Length: 350
Ligand code: TXA
Ligand code: MG
Image 1 (cartoon, protein in one colour):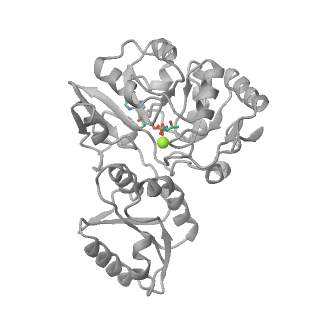
Image 2 (image 1 turned 180 degrees about the horizontal axis):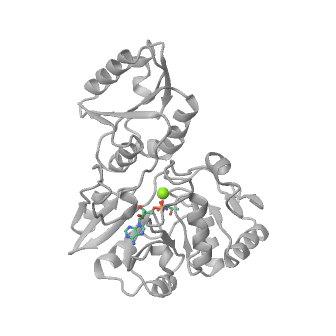
């Protein structure tokens, strides 16, 4: 890394210009968005995009999201925007929604991993918007993390793993949302959610649009199975710690099951990612460390902190990790999708 710029108190124009020059000269830059930090490069520059894959150690078949700051850029990169997609754009951009659209030739094949579509998103974060707008080019950016690890929601979490692999890092403080954007594709007139996020199925239904969750959101996928979004197949969010997700619609049953697991592992050290309300249910056990992920009713707070909490679990260096599940509704769908994947589908449902 050449330099770390601190924009937490505001954008420094001179420093921003240095980052823009880097983007226009094949640089790779970490910048904040409202969802998670991105690791970005000029989406028109194939060589620069190659560097992103290298920096993240990203599988070559997992396409990148292209970030734009205005609608002229959209016309430059996609061949057509359908009526349903237009409605989504009008209602949710700038914001945490990525829409899969048919791509133009101008976008190099490594951005889309040879698909004829690209994911496009207009972020709402001011630093991200100004970076794209002043660069004058769309920025291809996956989440800032080494592939397989939890996405970066604050610079402190990712600086060690990525500082030697990028040109510049912009610190914009802790992100607002904490989970990656909702990814959708319109298929046969329905908005199919390929990756759940802050924009929920209800938000989309409220526009009078037909909406469905892709069937793979909570399912383990065979390596030879074909899926709408390559990212669904790859290991993601996983801490090093061997971790299990315990989920029940009944809170007491969920707590009982976790207590049972703690007792079963009494010769081991156990890290628990659990709710504020449940601390005293677990505090009597001597072999546990408790990470408070917030109140079970405050989904926004949980989503903002969850990737950082997963990283904290690793820092505990315990033998076993146990995570409390949240309700699979609203934002809870996205949280449970990330947690299911973090546990590599090691889920106990009671
Ligand atoms: O919030 C976000 O979306 C963040 C910030 C930086 O914008 N970005 C992000 O990128 O999460 P990434 O690369 O970590 O996730 C992109 C997801 C992957 O699951 C990928 O497979 C999917 O979008 N995707 C990208 N292009 C696609 C396409 N053409 N068709 C289907 N899925 C696509
Ligand atoms: Mg990612």
